[in-house]
Length: 186
Image 1: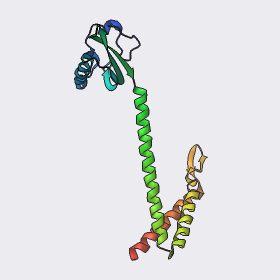
Image 2 (image 1 turned 120 degrees about the horizontal axis):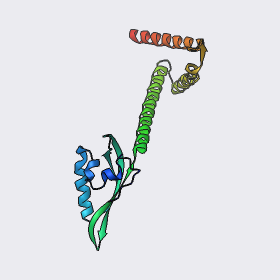
Image 3 (image 1 turned 120 degrees about the vertical axis):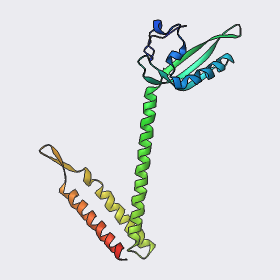
Image 4 (image 1 turned 180 degrees about the vertical axis):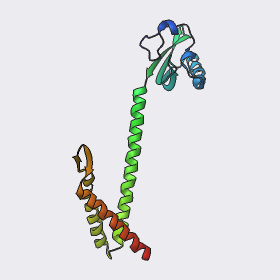
């Protein structure tokens, strides 16, 4: 049995050679090894099997395994196992999933805002042309105001929201209150 010293397991060749492979397998994953062994005994290779293995320090590491049977005159006499640390790939996948969820959340928010703009605009118009014009005007106004929160100035080392943005926020709040009162009376 050979052992690559650069292994992510933390074991040296002297510590690992001659010991059962279960040394590296977490208890809740021991069943995987019997499945792998049955594939090897049947002379089949196991490619890119993603699992978790245990390091010497007890930490867990995601790995991709490739196991090939070793034959002698057509008889399986052993196995060659290569484990690749896929921690970086898993972290990248998690980051990608987080970004996709964030993007989906933002898109849903955009649809919600768009729906609200249409609903508010529809209250004050009589025709489809007027509705289209009102929606377009509100969306343009929102687009212009999107840059205001980003305009900050620093006073004595602390970020301050610009007076323009503060006025805009107050104006938006007043409009929301007026709209609600109008809805309450209706």
